[in-house]
Image (cartoon, rainbow, N blue to C red):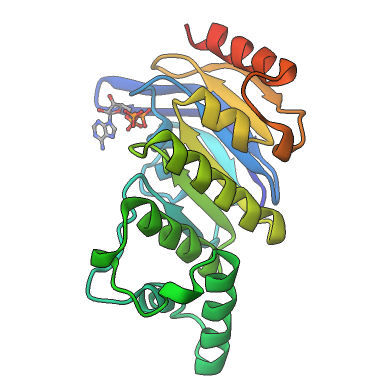
Length: 235
Ligand SMILES: Nc1ncnc2c1ncn2[C@@H]1O[C@H](COP(=O)(O)OP(=O)(O)OP(=O)(O)O)[C@@H](O)[C@H]1O
């Protein structure tokens, strides 16, 4: 699924949030929108799902498309097991055996097979978010929308989840858009990063992160160059 956004302008009453954005989210790439808190990043995702209407601009490619979500909170249903939470988003698949096979495959891909019958209440925060990643891939969506999904976790868990996400994504590429204010997350995940200004948000810059994902390690020369470039744009 490819999305083309031109001159996107959104206001809430007198508050102008997005000030005319051109964004392009290509098929099967991870696009990252990086910007300061409150600049309108979540609003962009809400425009993609048509829950916010723009004042001006055009959005091509979203009609009739299905989305999976990955939020900061895992938002699992506590009365369903891990497998039940995955099954819950597979309503469209009427064949029970097909649903079960898909669940098993995604559980395996995310290293959750041994936890299929566990309830969310027994899982750690990081594990719950891992289930949320599995659910996002299990849902037969055209695009995964991610709203700061790695915030609120300690560094070790955060890095482990980012690796988990990119591992699964490399195996089964899907169009994805992540919004974040975290430079490190943007460098680790993005094919292309769009940097926004304070609101009303405009595009400060946009460029491809041209390092193979397994080599995106802090402290390396190329990582540090991107880090400085993004830091300068945000400060
Ligand atoms: N439905 C709404 N009605 C009125 N104001 C809104 C609405 N949704 C968002 N806003 C305002 O628009 C601005 C941008 O909000 P948004 O959540 O898109 O920013 P953000 O960049 O995602 O923020 P954060 O990084 O803090 O999550 C904020 O000032 C917010 O209060």
